[in-house]
Image (spheres, rainbow, N blue to C red):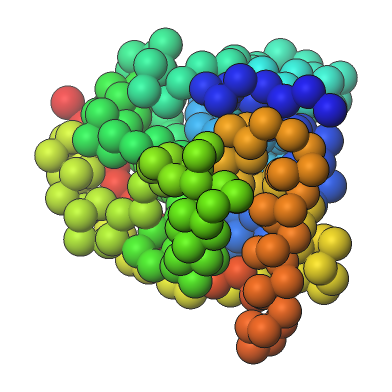
Amino acid sequence: MSQPPSNSREWHAAEYHRLSTPQFQWGQRVLSQLHLRGDECVLDAGCGTGKLTRLLLQNLPRGRVVGLDVSRNMVMHARRDLQPEFGDRARFVAADLLALPFRDAFDGIFSTASFHWVLDHDALFHNLFVALRPGGWLHAQCGGGPNLARLRERVRTLSQTVEFSPRLGQFPEPWFFSDAEGAARRMRSAGFHEVKTDLEQASFAVSSREEFQGYLRTFVLHRHLELLPSEALRERFVKELAVASDEDNPPRTLDYWRLNLRGCKANL
């Protein structure tokens, strides 16, 4: 099986859609906290395959949603699923959150499980602020604090072994997990008002070793696996991590932490 280059922005959209139960559940809880009029224009920043974009659209019967993702595979999947049902009320764009093509465009920005893939959060919050209209809001959640600390330590240790260190020994983590205080400071620096940030634990236990390996390949370690030169080596990497996770209590538990982010842009 050929692998994309190591700087690829792509995701396996079909596998993400199939395995994204915890992300969808987190997103549903975040979405349930929104108080929408029903006519807003909202950016779904990091829309993935569009599961939550659909719920946003259902809650905006007179509004519009722009689904944005850095992965073209995700955008094509979401567009294919949603535009036949929602027409022009659902638009999609493949773009980087550090190069948003919008200014004063949205009444609100919604996002879950995406911001931790952006390493420069100062630039991220600046770009989000610029994309909002005066009076607009940001309502988001991403990984934060000690997110996946146990798994990340195992990944670092395994990456230093003889078998994997030539490719992964110097590979920096592709995520940034901010604490709540740092996130609040960056949001205020970008211009946001009424900032609220907090961390919550959201551990998730996977039912089988096979599913755990699929989850690692699809959600957590695809950037690492792109650097390994063969499918056999990639399989050994995720299998060793899955075997170690059998000793968790409960077994195969992903120690997730979620960072909640709220803020608004003042009216002129």
